[in-house]
Amino acid sequence: MPSRTDTAWASRAPRLARPIKSAPLAASLVFQPIPLINRIPVELLAKIFSHYVVAFDLDSLVWHTVSSLGRTPTVLGHVCQHWRNTTLAFPTLWSSIVIHSPSRGDLMLAKMWLDRSGSFPLSIYLRPSLKPTPSECERVGDIFKTLCTQLHRWRTVTLILPRDMPSALINIPHGSLISLESATIDARSWPPDVADRLLSSFFSAPSLRRIDWGPRTRQNPRDVPWHQLTHVKLTSNSTPQEILEIMRQCVRLEGVHIICSKSHPPDPQLPVTLPNLRELEIFGDIEPSPLVEYLVLPALVQLKLTYRFRTSATRSRISTIQDLLDRSQCHLDAFIFEDDLIDESELCRLLCIPQLSNITQLRLLSMTTNQVLNLLTRSPTAAGDSPFPRLELLHLRRCHPTNNTFSTMVESRHNKQQGGNGLAQLRVLEAFLRSNDPLENDFTLIKRMCQSGLLARVTTHCWSVPGQLCRC
Image (cartoon, rainbow, N blue to C red; front, side):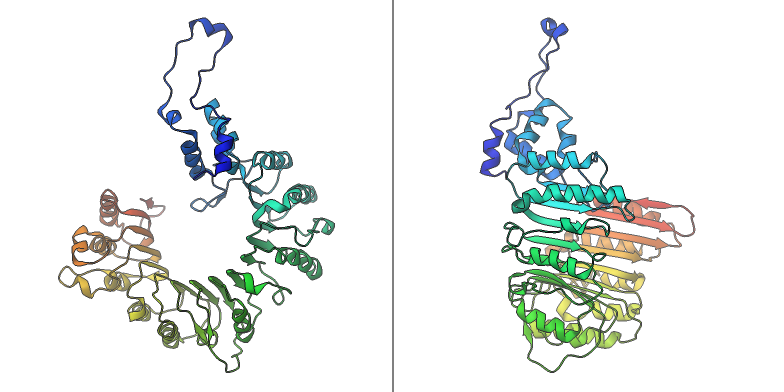
């Protein structure tokens, strides 16, 4: 809901739209009915606007920058005078400043955004193009300098800084980022001493809770305030021993992304218990068990595992996951898994472990075929014996079914009659299907289930019909 300050600003906006009077036609102007959308209180209209205005669209991977014609308050202000007055009366609609590949006019627009955002905390996203020209680097520097005039309002910041930007601009005073909560800083192209100086300024923020310093070619930076962080990404250059030592210091940790690339086993030690950790993500090209076997995570609800190594240690991998969940005695709610080399029978074995039985969200990014689909299909006579009785969201990124197999699985889980047996109904479905069969029947059935409440985004591609790409 809009804040009290927003409500105070709203007094400047008219309650109802007024017809625009043209001087030549003023005498004969006929009153036009006020649109229904403009009859609601401006506070509610601003709330609707806040859901429309986004900085980044995950579906289309589009940045809605200050200069774009995307989902910005500028576009809303072009609809009518009432909407323009409303957008100007609510500064929070202007508090997200996104600038990607800055053009000549973006500096002026950034100043306008800062002015219209009033005194509210800012979310900032600034990055150049992949190969910025010297003039673009200069524009990035000018915009960054302008944004630095409001350091005390920075709350969420993402900065990707070009190599040719003058390093003298990277001079943020310690203690000036009093509102900063989350920062993503990619300064990999900068000399290490300059990058560390910049990061040190962010580490001095008293309210900092999330930090990601991007890919680096060396160890973690110095002076990281581990004790106050709730979310962190640990780089691939850390050994399991170093990662465990860091995690012992993160007493408030709620989410961690670990990149494993060094397989040196840690020294024997006491378990690392993180009572607040809810999300664990491990990306590795080596076996993570030397690290995972020392973790105890009683609050864990989401586990994401991405494997990129070329080994056949699938069974030890499954036992590692089982041991972690058993040791932690946690109640997992979401499981995300990707392994390009895992055999599908082993994947089915992993999905059948008891520790995953109560998840409500399952995302499989590995290739799947009828074997996994048959496992997920509920039997009409023994529905209680199928895995994941509470599953409500399913994501299959690389599914290779035959005719009717996919839709049969979805229908068995979306069937409302299953709810009477204490089983959850599938509500959200995301899938990319590839097959030698056209899958026309599957597509028709999925569309029919969408009419009965299923939220689905399914793309099918038939190899036997070149160029065929269908979505629902």
